[in-house]
Image (cartoon, rainbow, N blue to C red; front, top):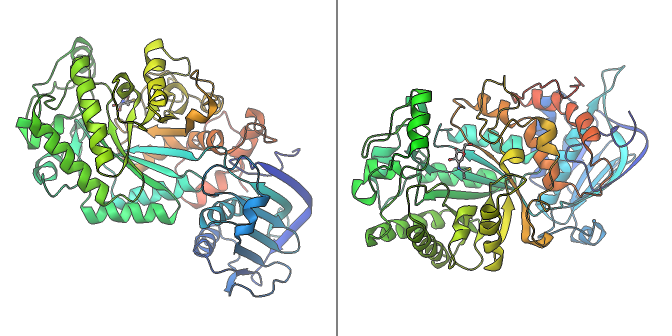
Length: 518
Ligand code: TNX
C-alpha cells in the first residue's frame, strides 16, 4: 500500500510524516508516564495480546523501545493551527523510542488511541512493533458526538461503558443520551418519583425497560469523563412524552392519532397509543405535554434542575422533534419557555432543529440538524434561526450520519426512512456544506443511534461499526489532511478489524470494505 494508506489510522491525522522501519515493542519496553492514559494503553495492549510494558515513573530517561507519555503545555503551540477549543491535539514521534506529548490529558488520550492503532504484529517473527513516524494531530471540530437512544431499548450502565470505550477510541468527545421518549422514562427524578416507578419498565416491542438511578447516571458521566466524553442528557419535550402520562396523566394531552401513525401501526402490527398505558409501538408525533398548563413548567423546571445538578457538561438537550399534534403557536410558546428554564438552571440549551421555528428561543441555544444533506427550505430556515439567536449547530444529516439507517435493503436491523446508508455514503458528506451558513456556525457533528430495532448491544454495534468510524473521520480530520478520501479511508478502516475483534465489538463486516486480520 502507498502512503497514507500504509498507516492504518482512523481518523486520519492532520499531519503525518512516515519514517523508515519500525520500532519493536518487547517485554523490556516501559511506559514512562504519570497519566491516567497509561492504564488505558496497557489494558488495551493486553487485550490485543501484545507484550505488556512495565510502567516507569515520569522523568525516567528513556532507552530504545520505551514509550514516553508526557503532558506538556508547550506542545499546543506546535500543533496544527486549526485546533479548536481546549487543546485536544497531540504530538507523536516514534523513533528509537516513542515520545507522545500533549497539552491536555484529552490530547494524551487521543495520542494513545493513535498509538494503539499503529501497534501491529509483525508478519514473520510473531513480534510486535510500531512504524517510525512523526504525527502532529488536532481535531477539525470541537463537537464530535454520538447518541444512544436508551428508551426504545434500554442499555444498562455496563453496556453504556462499552459504547463509550468503543466510540471514544475513535476520538468522539460527546455522548448524547436520549433518556426519555414515548416508550419509557430512563432516569430517576426525586421530585417526580413516579416517572421511574411507573413509566420505566416498558420499551419498544414489549421488551424489558429499565432506568438509571442517580448513582447510575453519575457513574456513566464519570466513566465518560475518564474517556474525555461529555454527556449531553436529553429530555424530549413537548412531544415524545407518552411515558410521562403513564406516571402523571394530568401532565399530558390525549394522544393525537394522525393518519401516518395509524397506517404505520397497521403495517407493523403495532398497537395505537392509549393515554396512561405503556406504549410499545414506534409511531411518532402523537404525544404532548399540556403546554398551557403551568404545572408543565413546574415539571420541566424540576427535571432540568435535577439533571443539571448531576451533569457537569454544559448542555441540557430539550428534544423538540416531531411534535406533530401541537399547533405552531403552542410549540413556539413551549420552546421559548423551556429553553429559558435551561438557561436559568445554568446550562446551555440544545434542541432538535424544529425548535428553531420559535422566534424567541433562548439566545445561544444550539440546534441539532437532522434533516437531509439536501435540506428542505423549512428545515434550513429553522436551523438558521439558532445562529440568528447567537447559537450554533451540530449536524446530524439523517441520510449520512444516522447510524440506525440500514446499510442496504437486506440488512436485518435498522430503519430506512432516510434511505439506505452504506459506509461510503456515511463517509462522503461535508457538514459545512449542508446549510447556507458560515463555517464557524457549525460546532461539529453527531451520529445518532435510535434503538427501535436494536434489542442488544451487539445489535447496536452492528449498526454503529464501521459507520461510526466514517463519522469520526468527518468530525476529526481536516479536509485537507492527506488521505482524507474514501479510497484511503476504505483501506484504513479495514485495518480496524483486529482492534475491534480484540475489544469484542460486533462490527458489520460489510463487503464494501476489505478487512485485514493483523
Ligand atoms: C426520528 S430524528 C426521530 C426519532 C426516531 C428516529 C428513527 C428525530 C429527532 N426523531 O424519534 O427514533 O427518527 O430513525
